[in-house]
Image (cartoon, rainbow, N blue to C red; front, top):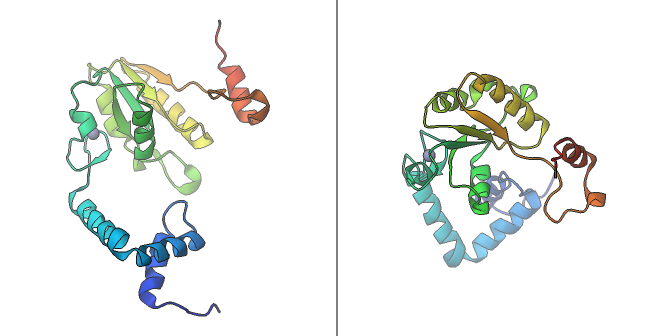
Length: 201
Ligand code: ZN
């Protein structure tokens, strides 16, 4: 049995930090130690920021984004193209697309992907609200910006079937060679997808 060298309070802090994505027990111990050492500069302000987050952060009832107001800032932004809806799996994907800044459209966050192995069926996702929104005559195009994983793509396929009788154009992200990518370094799946989705020049 590992020898207990810290008190239960610090152990609890480490255990909670270790639940964060990308942090294993080792990184969690380092993070906990950094927080404890920088009590005034880090631990106290982090505690205040988390308290504010607990009190004020809400999930947008329209799109599923997180913000301090509902509808969220993206849904309230009238400068966005009201005819395009971008469907993403998670809020992190919405943020990534916003950082890329290529389209000023609105979003719909599914809250994950269909995964029978993990017991996640269509009912567990924000699919009914998507179908309802796609039925709005202002919407002309639904972009399925789902992950290029087996689950992401089968979810995209499922949604395409559901959207077929709506008067919207359903599109998917192109798959293939990343900008600056050398063919030699690509995995076979990416290379195969790039060949399949080739375009006439
Ligand atoms: Zn929203």
